[in-house]
Image (cartoon, rainbow, N blue to C red; front, side, top):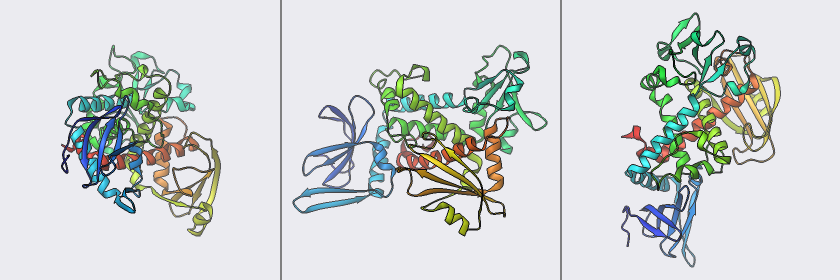
Length: 395
């Protein structure tokens, strides 16, 4: 008999129970693993049955777990009780040195994917930089030749962070070290310096992202976990994935999307908390009642903001605030009704400047990126709430 709070290793069915913790004398939660990423096991002691579910099930804080214990008998558990037990489970997992090493290696992998610079060879490219060049936190500017090469930040630089850069007027840059690889931003030591200045921005998102991916959370709205399964294949061999190029198929696609989400989050980090979000079934009517007038409207294709396409409208209240109304074409589990984002107009301007990466602003691209950044921020907060005792920064 497992006593309340006990942690144990065991085997159940075709997988292993990595750890377990009781909710009460009727139900325990387990971390259960087969061949790939683990699942949250919900074990009914009365019926001696375990149901594995993905950890993404925990992302909705309004969920209630209802368990049948016998004829006409049931017990409900709210998410607060479940969250407390899950935190205990992940704290137990973090004592496994192999798991901790895998978390660290995955965090570094995601960070590498986010910071590897995109190369610009010609000054003309800065006139209208393609989206593919804006998907990193850094650019390598070789437009004046490699000898005069420079790394350019592609994110909103705070006053404190700006002291780490060389300056040419309003331009911030770092010289490309002699003989260095044109994509080796780490050779400048800027990554560690930025982390020292603001670890909450420059380290924690990657650590939380790694934990979320490894435990099979939704990866910011995506339900497939091929990336997580690929990472866990190295757990038994203690041989961890070090390069994204070693991934294949959907695992590589999902890793790229996760890295892109983290790029958006880190890029827009300084002002994300200034965004106000709500949902409404008539965004246009709601915003007009609040004194906003419509300025621009455009379409966002399916896949940019989720599993449906959107009609996005930009509004202005004439008093220093911008609002974005997003009306989905179809049903989605990501939100209930239209999405509405409200922000000071200077925040909207900063977001477009950050996404421009020294080129011309692209409003459509910037809106997609800003919404992606906000979603990633909310996702990271939820994963952190469930896994904080297992995060290295918590110790």
